[in-house]
Length: 81
Image (cartoon, rainbow, N blue to C red; front, side, top):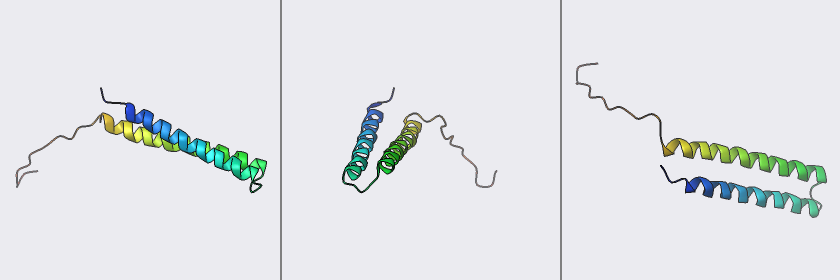
């Protein structure tokens, strides 16, 4: 079985980035640069984007852990097909 620790590290990384970005949106709301609706929309979109990016990253990582297809070496002669 492959070491699955990088999957957890990636999850924590994307989660931390998402939380920081949500805190930034709430900070912009508190500073008066965003309305309440804009800040909630920004938080939702940041969360949705984080989940989508993490899913894409995790599927890419998991597909490389244990590949299903293995290349088969064929030895073609110089004149044959």
